Image (cartoon, rainbow over all chains, first blue to last red; front, side, top):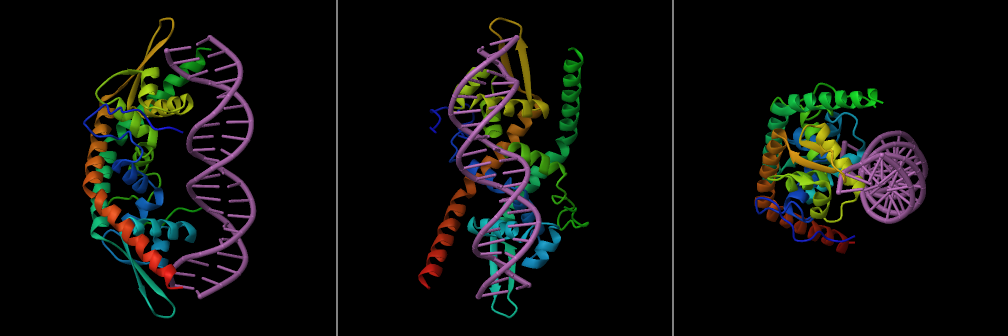
Length: 135
Length: 135
DNA sequence: CTGTATCCTTTCCGATACTG
DNA sequence: CAGTATCGGAAAGGATACAG
């Protein structure tokens, strides 16, 4: 529609431009399957079918789409062995291992604050209930 | 459809359960407007309209929805002044400031690796071009 | 085994109009 | 000023069938 003005409220970083680095990375890793695939691939190389088995329930479409995306961004390496039947192995690149580290930080933060979040949700729900009851 | 088996490939963390802490947090902060609002609110308290102006282009619907979501999760505090016309102020809670720190880490990682990602994309595109040309 | 193609449902999100 | 309600188009994502 239009691009935001020049604003950049904090830290000199522009989380505001939708074309910034943070956005690109966030859009990438915030995906449900991306997170799971990177996790599954963390210490090991896995083949397509095995990967699929571990992710319990992902459709071929989504797995392929996710893997292509990760490959395109340089997080995953795809190795095809010209055998029959075909054998394709997936593993994290160095960059992929690095995001895995970032995701570990996110996980740490999440686990140490999830209780506060849960408490906040409860408080919010209760406040909401009171608002309703006040009618 | 069905829940994944017991798998937990790495680090003792289960990024695999869709109901885990990481997922909840990731789903929250990975949202475009959530990231922008938290950023805009980082050091300061802002009113609804001012916030909207700074985010250039967000619709009222999305802003309200985003703010409610953040409030519900305890990241944002909403203060209503009973004046006329109404005046509503939004600010980060301590928890909100904390996620802001997490987002700074994500930003740091992103900025220091975005070049590698760009290079990977280029390489991928080129490889793709060769595959096409080989037909 | 490793995908691709298609359909179809669900969800997201912007535009718009209206309210206390 | 600070929202809420409703609508419609676009995009995401699952199920299924087919292919190299």
